[in-house]
Amino acid sequence: MIFHRIKRKIYKAFHPVSGEIWMLHRVVEQRSIVPEQRELEVTVDWLEQKILEYKAKGYSFISIDELPSIFNFQFSIFNSHRWVCITFDDGYQDNYTLAYPMLKRLDVPFTVYVTTGFIDNRLPMWWYPDKQLGISTDELKVLDADPLCTIGVHTVNHPKLDTLTREQQYQEIAESKQVLENLLGHEVHHFSFPHGVHNEDTLAICRELGFQTAAQSWGGPLRCHEHLCPLPRVNIMQA
Ligand SMILES: [Zn+2]
Image (cartoon, rainbow, N blue to C red; front, side):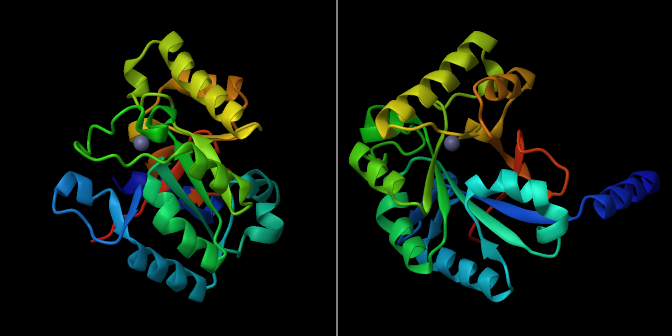
C-alpha cells in the first residue's frame, strides 16, 4: 500500500498535469428527474458558470486539434499553462441549440462526437425512450463550418466495442468515420469509445484508421507523456 502510494507520487512528479479533457453529454435548460438521464445532463447556466470559473483561474480553452502539438511542446510552453478541452458525446441536438450559442459567446472551442445512427433520429437513443434528441444533418454542417467546433466519430450504433469481434469493431468505427467524412467533405481525426470501453483491438483499429486521438470516459486529467490513444477524460457532472 505504502509502496503503491510512493510509486504513484514518483509517477506524478515525472508526469505533471498538462490539462483536462471534459466529457459531457447533454446540455439542457431543466434537468430530468430520471436519475440515469439526469446524470447525462448539465444546465447551460451551470456549464457557463464552470467555464467562467476556470477562465478566472487562468485556464485556457483549447480545441482538440491542438492536443498533438501541445504534447510536442508541453515542457517548454505548456508546463505551467493549464488548459481545458471540452467534448460532448453522442450527438445531441441540444449541443447545437443550447451549448453552441453559449460557447460561441464565450469563444470556447468544443468537440462533438457523433454516433452516425443518431443523426436525424434514424436510430433511437434507447436511454431516452419517447424522445427525439439527435442532431440533424443541417445542424451538424453548421457546427462543422465553425472553426470553434470539431466533429468526431462515436461509431454507427453506439455498441460496447469490447463485446464485439475485431471485424465488427472495424465495421462500426470505419463506417462511422466514412459516413461523417462523406457528409462533411473532409477527414475526421478524433474518436471516442461508446460507454467508454475498448480493448487492444479497438486501439489498433483507431491507429490503423489514422485517428489522432481516441477518448475514453475516465482517467482524470491528461498528464505529460501520457497517450492520446486512449485519451483520458474527466467526467463533468452537475450535482
Ligand atoms: Zn456515447
